[in-house]
Amino acid sequence: MHAHDILVARREQLERALAEIAETSAWALTIARLRCLRGIDTLSALGLVAEVGDFRRFQHPRFLASYLGLVPSEHSSGEKRRQGGITKAGSKHARRLLVEAAWQYRHVPRTSHHISQRQKGQDPRVIDIAWRAQRRHYKRWQRLLGERRKRSTVVAVAIGRELAAFCWEIATLTG
Image (cartoon, rainbow, N blue to C red):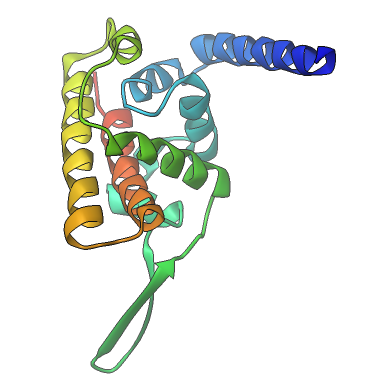
């Protein structure tokens, strides 16, 4: 039990150190904005920014999703078009962060105490985007799982791809 307590204390110490780094880094604004999304807190936002870098280098969110390997592979010839699983190109860590965050969107959209604390002082446009993401992803989760009978893991990856687009939108806001 003592060894477990030591590891938990070390983890908390590392999380505090990373939070301090996030607040003073050149990417502090982007990290704070990404934290407005459900399922993304300081460590996830910091990881995404570290893996992606400057979101503005992608002209469109579909290029970001492609960079992260969240788009379906394709094996086509002639008239036949066959899509497979995701390409898994790019950053495995960023892809995992987005898919893990996507699991939060299966719950009914709401602004919890934690999310409202993270959204304090943020641009109202960012909060609107975060709310729009919650509503869209919840509806999409219900439709894919219920109506289309997709496996929940497949749904989580699909929502993760869309979440990457919302992250791009938030990160590229000017002002």
